Structure formats: C-alpha cells, structure tokens
Length: 605
Image 1 (cartoon, helix red, strand yellow):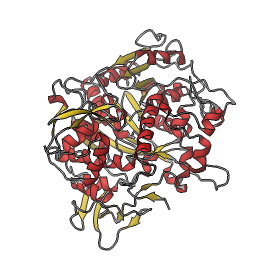
Image 2 (cartoon, rainbow, N blue to C red; image 1 turned 90 degrees about the vertical axis):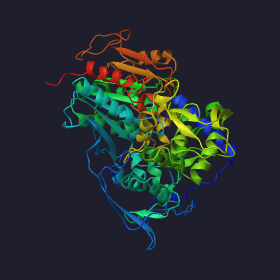
Image 3 (cartoon, rainbow, N blue to C red; image 1 turned 30 degrees about the vertical axis):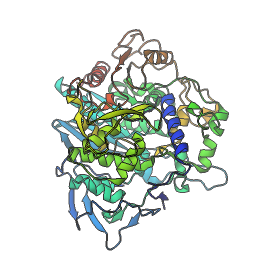
Image 4 (spheres, rainbow, N blue to C red; image 1 turned 180 degrees about the vertical axis):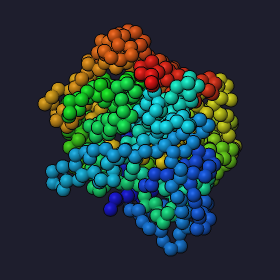
C-alpha cells in the first residue's frame, strides 16, 4: 500500500517562520542549480469538452461542498453514497489545435537500483513505474517518426512535460510554415506516474473544473469508483525506492527515449530548461556502461535559461550533507540520510503539493470561464500566503491565475511569467519570501485582469497559453513529487569531468567527457541566466569545434554555427517555453530553436 498524507491545509509542522526560511532557501537552491520551474493516462480538453473523453455521471457533483479534507492515508474505493464520475480514456493521438497533434506515449525504461540502505529490506522500484511518459507533438496529418528533427525536451525543477506545451505547439507550427516537419517529445520523469490525475481527467471531460476541487479538496466525489486518498507522504517507506531516482536513472531513461527517435545523431536535438539544461548537458557528456558517448547520440544541444558548471560537492558533502543551504538557512541533507528515511521528494515549504493541484484547478477555470468569480476557500488560503495579505479581495479566475504567476506578483521566480496586468488598485509589498511584489490593495473591490497582449506595454505570454501548459493532462506543468536525489546528483557534476573511481562515478554519475562534447549548442538566457558570461563558461566543457560528420563540422565556438547565445532580458524564467511566437511582442525562441534544428540535422530523402 502507498502511504499518503491528508491535505494538511492548516498544518505547518515547523511553524510559518521555519517554512518561509526553507522556501527562501529552496528558491536559492534552484538558482544555484540552474533550476526552475514538472493513475490513468487519459487526454484532457484544452478548454471545452471536444469529445476526447466519454463520460457518464452517476449524480451531479457538489461543487460547493465543504472544503474539509478526509485525512485518509491511502487510495480507497468510493463509499456507497458518494457521487461517482465515470471517465473513459479519450482519443490518443488527438488534434489539440489547428495543425497540431499531441500523442501520449509510455516508454518502458530500465529498472534502477533498489534502495539498499542498511537496516532495511531492499526497496526496488515497482515494475509499473519503470516507464516514462512522453508528450509527442507533431504536424496534423503526418505519421510519427517522419520529421526532419525531433526535439527531446527535459523539464526543470518541479517541471512536467506540460511546461513545454507552448513551445512545442509553436515549434510544430513554425516548421510547418517553413515546409518542414519538426516533432517535440517532452519527457515526464517517472515520478509523474505517481500522481493521481483522475480528478483532472473528470474536470476536463465534463468541462467543469469544480469536479477537480470536489475530488481533491472536499473529496465529495469519486472517479471511476476511486476516491482521492491524499498526497504521498515525503518520508513514506513505501516510496523509499525514490532515493535512487537520481541523475543516472534519468539519463538512462532519456537515452531510451532518444533511441526511439532513431538516427539520433542525424535527427535529435536534446533541449533542457532550467535544471533540465544541466541534465541535458550531463547527458551529452555521459559515457554509458556500453561505452556509448552521449553526444554521439544527438545532433545538437539546446539549453534554455539554465547551465551547469561550478564547484562540485565533496564526498563528505554528498553523503552526509551538512553544507550551508543557500542564504545560510539551515543545512542540506546527504544521500545517506535520504536513503535511510527520506524525505524522498521535494514539497514546497508552507505550500505543499496541494498548491500545485490548486494551480491546476485555477488554470482550468481560466480556460473555461476566465471572467467568472469563484468562491474558493482553499485557494484563498494559499493566495494569502503567497501574496502576504490579510484580506484577499474577490477576483476573476483570470486575475487569480495572473496574480499567482505574473512576474510582478509571483514571489516564486522559477514559476513566473509575463501574463499581463491587474485591473484594480495595487501596491508594492514585501512577500513572505523576501522580494517585493505587486499585491491587490482594496479588499472590497472585485479584481479582473488585462491579458498580456493587451497590456501596456504588451507582454509575451497570454493567460490561455500559460493555462494550457498547467492543464496538459495526462501530464502537467508542475511535477507533484520531484525526486530529492536528482539535485544532489546534479550538484556533483562540477565541470563534467567525473573521474573513474570517484564517489560520483561509483554512484553511477558518468559525466566523464567534459571538454570532448562535439555537438553545436544553442544557449538561451532569460530570467535565471541573465549574463552571457555564464554561458561562455560552458565552452570549456565542449570540444574546440563541431565534430566531423555533422552539418557544421569544424565550426568553432566563436562561430554562431558552433555556439549561439540568445539573451532575452525582458523575459521571465518561464516565458521562453510558454509564450507563443505569434502574439506581440513575440517570442523569438521557437524560431531560434527551429533554425538550430534545421541547420544541424540532415534533410529527409
């Protein structure tokens, strides 16, 4: 049985001040790592029910049911009096907008090592979790695998495959306008398979976001006979196998996905955003157990607002922790303690996993009824914490989503986007997390929202584009259970010159090829990587020129054909992968990435 916790909406185990400090430290850790803001696999509707799910409702849901949580610690069958929603799997693949098809594919991947911590039974990964889910985007009317280029995309800290939804749509359409075919394969880490998305499936199928609230928050409905039993407990022994879901596990999973694309050296561009950029670079520098070099399996490397490098953890720090956390707030945990008892995944202090679920519900409200004003006690509790206000005014669904994620009002820099401006009086205030943010100043006024394209000056990410990424079921924008092991392993990479026999190598971290990686590179900086110098430091981890047999063989790293940098100082951390290309002022990332893929892959014969 998988142990789960109750909602915990009123519980702050170590106190609000401690949680606030921990969250500030976590944000600092994301910046240090180059990180940012990842049940049944069924398809969702983007806004209204498009017929992709067949649904029957045994009784109408109580959308205004009590906001209390039941506190169960495991998934359970529905009781005899509970409202049940039956949801059938939808069409897969399906057209998600004119000219763009999205297909959900589950890829079998190797089993990682079991958690072998002393004093406990070995805990292997369950067989049904030895898969990764991939969202594959391609032009409508085309067969999979016929594209000139496949861009395999790795999400960042707390990121799911849905975080690439805006970029993927834009890339497919940009390529089609140029008479080319490009596919985007966005990867969900295997931890995404731990999420119970039944409530989101029901909400999408019935075009009613309040069904998700009824499933996760009031727990007044069941879906397909199952009711929500709570969120996974971070220290639960039943998920101790997550201690081994680190960088070696993920890199091997990525390799399997790349191999499915076939002719990787000629076709596949590996892209990573935020922490995913560091992971993508590590993949390129990886020497696998069968002596295959990572860079020999790809045509190019695109890193988006993230970069590896810097000092590596020592062996003592890696295993025992104890190093100061960013800002000097507490100390870090080492691998030994992680294996012995967790916590096995990251949960945002003060906010918890439920914050991600509420954001997904609010996103669906934006897609269905952006101007509606919904009373939601749990959302308001969360927003009072995020905005650090005592009284939260009424606001439309668009305003709620905007205040949560716009760069002016979002204190979580790794989740911020430029999505428009509020309609109503505001003031600048200190957030609980430290930075100054824009908050509503009139608790009696109903706030609404001016969308990004209509703002003055115009901003780059429309609310709808952002909401579609947050609602990309059966994936999602944010990962509920981000493995705690992964950033520890990334912190051991250093300059990608891991020595054989070192502690990192013994743990399977095989990024040994720093200085030899011969692929062309596209580096894009925005809200996190704000200085070109951070990208220039990457050159020492590459070969002096693009390798033989590649379209731009011999190009030096001083030549844009070998190393191109695109800096976007007005964009936030998330804008490059979320904003469409066509909305003014326009997002240059889809064109830049298309041109990079076109120029570094072989034409189809």
